[in-house]
Length: 216
Image 1 (cartoon, rainbow, N blue to C red):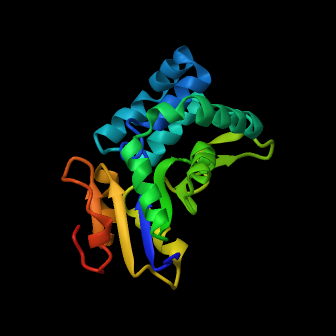
Image 2 (cartoon, rainbow, N blue to C red):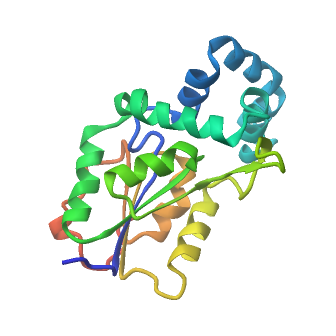
């Protein structure tokens, strides 16, 4: 029986996937020469983000603008479908997919919360049973081409919590599980009743974790 009062929120990159899926997506879409050129063109922003002088979202948008900027939505959708079918499966962690299935078998609501774009996350997430995807969204211009900016703020750090709270609105979960792997998941982990960060211990047994007690 479904228990809508329990929510499991999963980060994607480094948590469900073994690496940064956005870099793999861009490289497989435009090829290595264009990928490297884009990284060079966006290097000022990327270095600024690494030094915490530039917002991560600004740097990410600059990189995408230099690599897939101006690409038509239909072409990007086709690129995303091909990536989901041909490349993404090899990047996934079987044990985390099993964890998603465990939550679903217990009737919990599962939601993907990621800084990567919904362009490819949304079709993938639907195929494995996620109820919704909260992520970074690309913006398109009047000609339906990628405008090189985001339609919503980069879904990282505090933005993950804002997206979750907006999603559940006036009916917050009785119990929130959060799964992550990096600094970008810190606020989501702190908001959760049960949090797991990769590299900081084993996954908690779900049968012992239904009580609403904070363990992050």
